[in-house]
Amino acid sequence: MEKLASKLAGIKTVAIAGHVRPDGDCIGSCMGLYLYLKENELDIKCDVYLETAKEGFSYIKNLEEAKQEYDSQAEYDLLILLDVSSPDRIGVAGEALKTAKKTICLDHHISNHGFADENLIEPEMSSASELLFHLLEEEKITKDVAEAIYTGIASDTGVFKYSCTSPETMRVVAKLMEKGIDFSSIIDQSFYEKSYVQNQILGRCLMESIQVLDKKCIIGCLRKRDLDFYGVGPKELDGIVEQLRLTRGVEVAVFIYETKTQEFKVSLRSKSKVDVNKIASYFSGGGHVRAAGCTMQGSIYDVMNNLLKQIEKEIKEKMQ
Ligand SMILES: [Mn+2]
Image 1 (cartoon, rainbow, N blue to C red):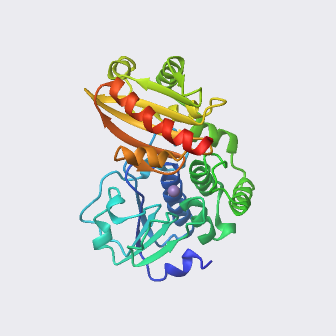
Image 2: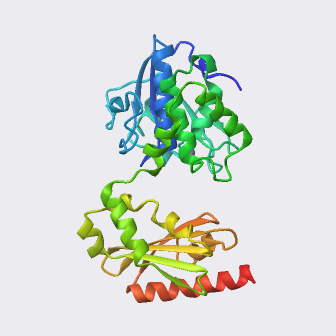
Image 3: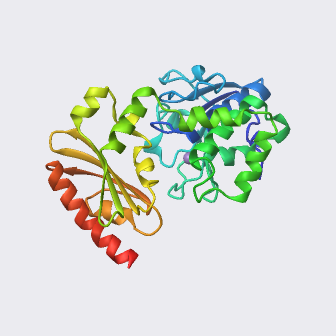
């Protein structure tokens, strides 16, 4: 693969940007590239834009330098977008797509149609971070850069277990490990660690969960009053549905939380057979075969009844 350096001739200013509500891959790839350019391209002035710096990623060097607001006076020779699948998903630096002299997009989403001047889209790769690795010169990747890229790969592969993890992903990961990174601590901090209240609300939801449909389906539900009691928002409910899914014998996991009176957000996961995208789509939501979601109106009893009818239909169809 042609290295990024070949695209930097004559470039004096670079803006790096990711997508709205940045995840681990977005933060890891943006910061990895930012640190790499700062360390190796001393003539280039570089800014990185990330909407929010999520808690848990504070070990990434210079993360505090990421800008959360776009300076409309700024002019860049080059805008590099990472993990951004469409123009409307560019976070704070959306304006730069029009004003930068040249734009490059590095991405791995199959849905990316190529909206930048130059587009490097590799849907076979686990993450934008894995793609970025191939564009950098390996010997110039320092431990700090390796930590950021490793974070991105670990995040998008669900710590190397999702089907997007390839043997090539693991070869890249091996090279990052050789840079001396503390991979155990990175995985703990960026992926598994929860705040105390997050653990409390997870426990509460698991404790009150119920198994239905011959124990093939598990449902966990949190009401608005529970969320208010613990003082948690939707962002802090990540991972609950995944824990429900890991219940032995369960095929479909459902996590429901109340957003306002008579309105519920529903997350669906399946293990190996049921197409939860089909179920979510029935209720005007969507997602993937094994992970999908929708918003539903009505009382909690209506929501559960309507959902369970569709889940039962799918389970009967796929599991008999
Ligand atoms: Mn990604």
